Length: 322
Image 1 (tube, rainbow, N blue to C red):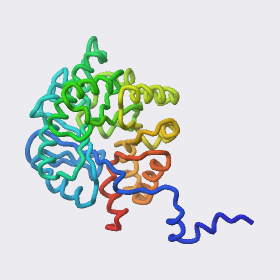
Image 2 (cartoon, rainbow, N blue to C red):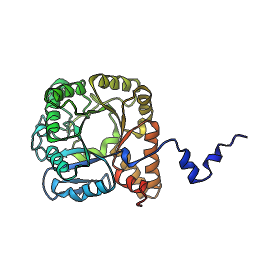
Image 3 (cartoon, one colour):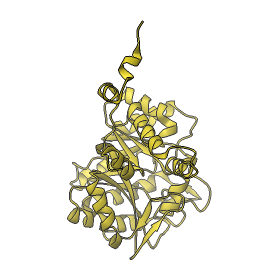
Image 4 (cartoon, helix red, strand yellow):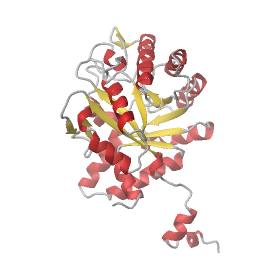
């Protein structure tokens, strides 16, 4: 009789033959930085995740470095917003300030800047509005400004998240013309119009004041369209492709893995984080075990990198610190 259980007998052999390995080097931790002073505020819908002002970041950054987490995705929350989100491309913008500070004081951290406008616009949409609709091409012009500003500030990578048509190509051209041809782009290539983003909108003050984002983010019912979106971004020069959300879209992640040799990122989004935390708080699940399981599932489906709010606690578990 063939007995697959022979290779499951104990932890030693299970580890030896494990097909998928999860490492702290896989993690990118999203970080919310708010303009102002003396700010450290827990996000009610995301237990354990805070918004920080720049002067309150040091303890957090030291912990991140000590845990060996290699990379951060930076999101900024400005004091003042306008119709275009112009704070996003100012030299003294909150993310630009944060990049310079972190690079000077924590140089080992690899900094990825989210490139979008929803946190910066007074209407909460991801670009310039014309007749209450996001104008794709006007938004691309501002996306170019934001990209160049973040590159000059010292970002290591840029990650456009607005799902504008032609966004990667516009950024690539603007960056190359300004002397930043070595700046990599991680494209939110396949980003669905998902209800899983609810807690993030609390975290980043980015909820639309009217309507929704279905006109520019993808329909959750569509699978083939994901390949079309990814093809376009590859043709325009994307260096890494992302699928967002991750957990309910592992089939899409696998489709991209089978199609491309580019590195793939999966965004384990705020709603996925919040659901696990809520169920664990009720005692309905083992939160730590389920957290590691779902991250492994993302790796198994094809992710090379995982953006996750669990990065710190997962790093502690993987390193035997808890």
